[in-house]
Amino acid sequence: LHRVDRRQRQMCIRDSLDCHATTIPTNQLVGQLSSWLHRWLVTRRVKNMTISAQAARTREALLVAGRTEFAEHGLAGARTDRIAALAQVNKQRMYAYFGNKEGLFTAVVADALNDLLEIVALPNQGTRTEKVIEYVTSVATYHRQHPELLRLLQWEALELRPGNEIDSERREKYSNKVDSFADAFGLQRSQAAHMLHAIIGLAAWPVAIPQLTQLILGQTLDTALDTAVQW
Image (tube, rainbow, N blue to C red):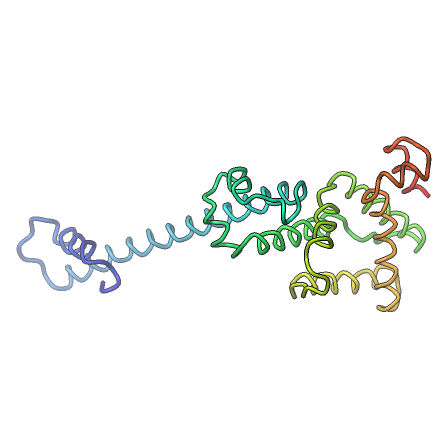
């Protein structure tokens, strides 16, 4: 009971004595106190779980709002007040969860990359050539449907210092991706790393630089993107 504040201790004793009782056997008092304490601990645990769920929702809302804002304006041009307004949370929550605007930007980029890794699976059937075609098509389709990822990566390359240390979790996920790619395509790891990098380039470049894709292929943008992937 020492963990409970004074007012709650008083309420505990009053409730356990049933407010009017004058004499209660010790074992009955202990039982009533234990029962009350159990209810209080359960209530506190539920409250903590509710707070954790709310914190997770707040963090997710900031990541979603940050993705929209950073993709449109980059790191320097993004406004934290716009992010907070879009997320419908207090701006101080952003600093509590991510430290500063750059911390949120880094988390947004990592979150967007995680979506790609989770949604676009490696092919597991067909010849190596068929797998390459399938994977290039899948990655290109994803980028066309989610152009904000490439915009975020371009902003990151432009605005963060070259050689900035990439967080260990992100590095580990892509290291695992190379291992999975090597297994799926039957390659040595060093070969798989270069091949994965080249495939991502084939899939992403037409979407990342659409004006050159359109100019070089001499077609409308949608047709040019289709043609680039088919080629």
